[in-house]
Length: 305
Length: 307
Image (cartoon, rainbow over all chains, first blue to last red; front, side, top):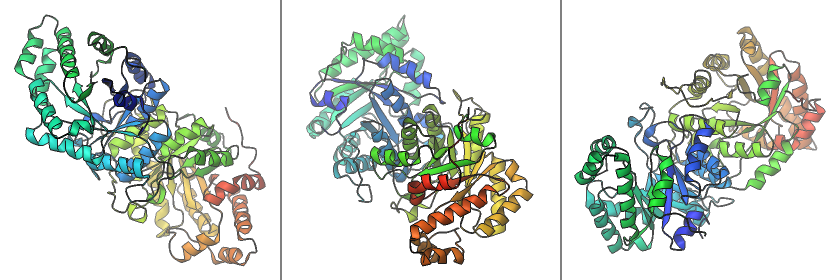
């Protein structure tokens, strides 16, 4: 075992993993975090805690992760390269581990220009692939980036993200390969709506032997409304929503139900797909719907490991 | 009450405060923190937790501070502007206050080229004065930098900063203190004092500007030893001046360590009587080990309990 986290145990024993996501509040509001966790407890194997996503200031990912641990859930601590240099990152990793955090997701981060502090300095001392390798070095060699020894190494299960949909499409799998080579143990993908294209991506990953080296969790976000579907298709970079999916939601009498139905169908399809070891459900400000989706997709009860 | 911290209550009541310092380990070893916490417990009102000081990677100040709370001590979380931009700083402040941290200290931070990550990018999106202003705005107005939107919950922090009372140009130092006061700082801890005459001169300038009535000033002390003297002679301790008389006392002493503690105790006795000084801040490894002896012999025990 690399970390002994629940997520690692679920994946290494060949179970189909199910992870959720929680966006921290825009302040020190602990109750807001606790309320969101109540919908996820017992439903998912672990919960991603976003790190100032879209460049908007929120409670820090690792502090929110600690609250989750207190509430009895396992966090996937996200860390972006936008806001911290290598000193702060390595220091935060040591602190997070000391407090019981065992899973980490290494990301570059959305550019600060798009957030609520556009004048902030973008740090980008290292990038996401380098962060993966720093974390691996700290864990496996017990050394900092500068080769000095650490007096107790952080045993983290190392995650990273992959976007199968950005252009140029055929390059995406090489970026995945770089992350695998740098030391990623698991991958969570950008949200998938275009299943055909995702199948192609997975075929490439299988052909290159990547799926034998890394656990891939397919990312999903249920569509709440036709407006959301249209907005995301048009404005969110790196996301493709096929017209027939938009039509299904737009024309449905109850668009939210239809969005959930599409999500459930996707999970059933992903379960059978070679190389996919789980799903990552990003129910943005819709955490209370996660139990329903899990039930309909037969993802609960979660395995005991 | 701005934060309701123990340190704030003691200073507000006009009691002479004592703060100590704890340096986090270069790893995850919690037992190191526990051992140091045991040395400090009962002798100080709050404990500074350094933030990758001298740019050497250690466990983060916030994580260590949270561990100290669990161990029954009150932390003063140090935060430098070297390693984090305004997004991370403000985000970490939400996290720190949610986890029970009530005191913080705003610092610029030692330059990374002096540490063990010399190729690191230094961030310095904000400087220490701007960080003070940023925290004060979050606490008193409930808004983020440059934003109108109210934050969820309250960011109750007792805001500290440092001041070097001895660096050159000497007459500029107090102007810098004035900037920090204007930005909204509540308390100041000074750099290590060895030259008492120079410190007294500085305090006079502070009083002339009325700054001692606007902020609480904690005088920094650190037991003198041979290593510090060598570093000072090699110009390796910027902003610290050690009078020759004190150097001689250490180098000529039979037991240099005991002499260093003795000097420290004499200094504290003098500082207690100095107008405008509201407490002391004891630093250094020797300070950590000898804090019981130092506080006892200067009549600072038992530490007051305040409601």
